Image (tube, rainbow, N blue to C red; front, side, top):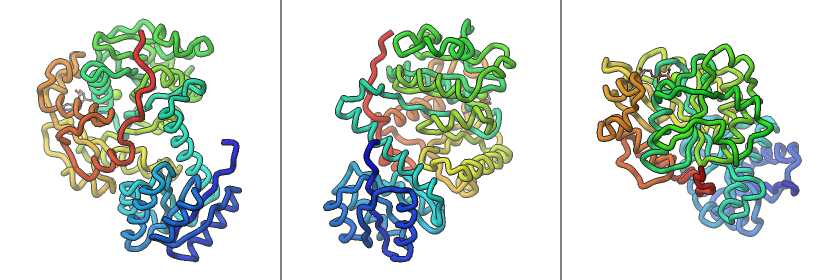
Length: 412
Ligand SMILES: Nc1ncnc2c1ncn2[C@@H]1O[C@H](COP(=O)(O)OP(=O)(O)O)[C@@H](O)[C@H]1O
Ligand SMILES: [Mg+2]
């Protein structure tokens, strides 16, 4: 972005406004003005036409939420970033529901503000270019969805493979599933594919690969799903650097509308690189105590590195017929609503074990249907009979209704 972004500050509290203004100055951003909540903000915004609006959350947050909605009515394309003194999960969620793109806590570091503004502007720019069809030159990118979870056995690979098959097979999307599990990647095994190439070959030839020849380095499942398997010998992962893996994701994202990345259950450098490249993270937890506990620690760790909260979607996967922790309790502990919830289903289990995924083997089953509906929700398809909460679902619909227009077609 050649021009310095102009920022408008909206807050009822003059002291907070002053504090944030200092931050904007410190970040060497342009200052488009400041206003209190309500009509004052809306009229100034429509006059000043800032690049970004940052809005303080009032207590209670109702007035700020109304203001955010009113601002979006007049300037639907202007990203709004919300902030508050305390990052209460509920306030964050409400702000996001109202349409804010990001959230930070004050006092904040200048870098936090700069990062936030950069990321909301970049995503706005990408959307704008796509909508106006000008994206060819700079290369459009597909949606990168990381399937993550803080423990092995919570069903990450099961979900990644079923989702990939549902997206490619049932919904005809252009999708690649990349195995990013550098402990024991088993995507290919779960799809009953015998890989003759892997991410290691891809990385060796990265300089020669572009969107026109990328499929030569991938494998195709009969459903139409493309797969980039893990190396057969897991020690070969040692030659894969996080940066090299980022490049892989960037290349495939230029060729496919949706890039699914399965991952290992640890916050390694590779995992952090994957999370960084992802536009959305499906954070999988099962109902057992250690999975929940690890999720809590993992999510806290991401918060500490200011990972954008809005990218994370919590997914409950019930992997065992035995009683576990109640879902409502898990939501309380993790301070998040479930975006989706997948029931225990024998067909899912058997499918994963014999390499015949439930969405293909028994698409009418309870579990498979839930997974197909999840695929639909991710592609902004018709609102499924959501297997879970209206609140989270609304959150998703309003924030990122569709993974942006489909810009590339499946071509080979
Ligand atoms: N919803 C489910 N219902 C029944 N079994 C499941 C479900 N999800 C996963 N499983 C089973 O749990 C096991 C672990 O799943 P996996 O996808 O390998 O976990 P991860 O990739 O997180 O290590 C597999 O045997 C799979 O069949
Ligand atoms: Mg796995």
